[in-house]
Image: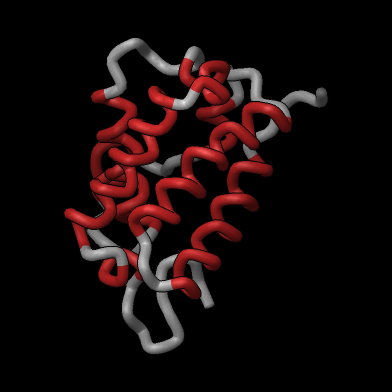
Length: 134
């Protein structure tokens, strides 16, 4: 099973509720990053105004989850690892990012199987972004 389709052929984008559901997940993710004291290190890696970060992440997830390829249309191939290389990402930063995403999933995704799959996929991706050892 791919990251963007379930066994019945429904995209993750559709399972999350389309544009509104994906946008809600992204917004909650960034809200948590801004609110949680234990995630201030990764918040500091972002611009003060998170509007562009929110929009880019929404556009990326839209296409990644099987919806419109908004990110690719505007920015080209995501090249996730290359785009994250300028930022120091170790286990602590990965874990802070995952804390925000896992909580956002817990709050926004009611299907437990989908939530588990999302968390597994996000862990693999976040772990791949690490570019420094602790």
